[in-house]
Amino acid sequence: FLGRSYFQAGDEIIFSQMEHHSNIVPWQMLALEKKLKLRVIPIDDKGELRLDVFEKLLTSKTKLLAVSHVSNALGTINPIAKMARMARARGALVLVDGAQSAGHLKIDVQALGADFFVFSGHKLYGPTGVGVLYGRKALLERFSPAKFGGGMIENVFLKTSSFAPLPLKFEAGTPMIAEAVALKKALDYLENLGHEKLQQHERALLEYATQKLLQIEGLKIIGQAQEKAAIISFSLDKIHPLDLAMWLDLKKIALRSGHHCAQPTMRHFKLPATARISFGVYNTKEEIERFFRALQKAVLELRK
Image 1 (spheres, rainbow, N blue to C red):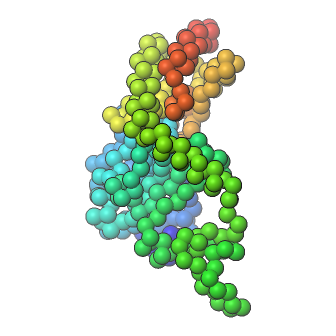
Image 2 (cartoon, helix red, strand yellow):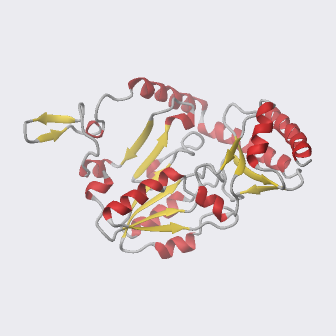
Image 3 (cartoon, rainbow, N blue to C red):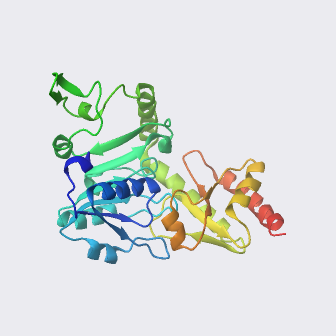
């Protein structure tokens, strides 16, 4: 719906080098359609955004900043509130990809300065195929629907139609009722658990796992931002991440390998892929110990 009425030819969209592909490809397609210009915030070797460059990228033509709250590939927690203030000072809207933060951090969209905040249900222990788009009411009232169908109309005549009030005008067709109910249960679970307690638990696991991994010869942690979520990406000398993941899978230890739908991030670090471990409310230090022992054996065998 942003593409329908908000952007004009020559307008600029800013996103970062560390974005998930889902926060890059749609803007590329929209830029082709509307003749927009794309600007990219680079990252440094610690995996933090170059805010000095970002400040220079902002112009009177900047119409949207689209940036991830937490990098899924590096774990970096970006300074969204500061970036939003900078963008708004130039009259731009701010869209925050919260897929990686909504299940781990306490979210206050007003404190962040987000005009839009999006996240997916399966990232916070809910079902797949459902997510949330938050938008400021004044903006949502201003924009036209992007999809059309039953449920989102007020009155339909043969040649004209009017749309239902928010949020119904953006909910075309039959909604994913079962998934939405399940997502609510997942959100209630996290609220009842307590975000502060959850963050303390994950932070302790992150610190413990980091200390363990640094004991492995030839292991390099990719992304060492000062503000970081419970994600560790790493590379190992002479071992491909896919080989490591397959070896550990046989030991019933699951970790992610690949480019993590963040190829521009991988290119910055001159890597085709990394191995990645991530932590949630259900993980324990005992699991980290088991992973560490298996990793030591994997390194010995795979380097042969």
